[in-house]
Length: 88
Image (tube, rainbow, N blue to C red; front, side, top):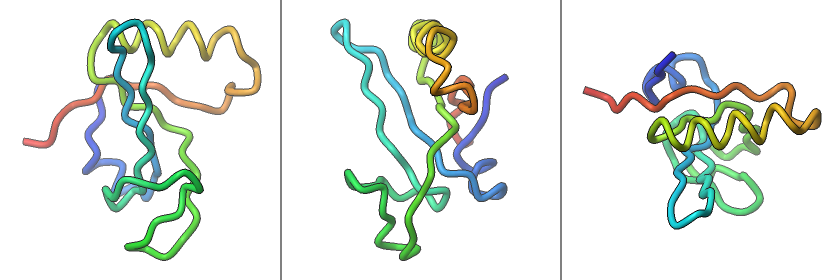
């Protein structure tokens, strides 16, 4: 199921945007407000510590990589993975 950042904003869900590029997985953390987070996952705009457990994948290849990683690692069983649907 595809999900938009706007929908996550409505649900107040922090998230990662993931992309598979040059044989590496890049995951950028975002606050539900849309702000890109620092290494401590702190949002300067909302003044709060964020918890990202939703992963939005930019394409099908990235989705496959992330699903395999999550499936093989019980530490991440609470994470959700979706295709990224860009806001219209």
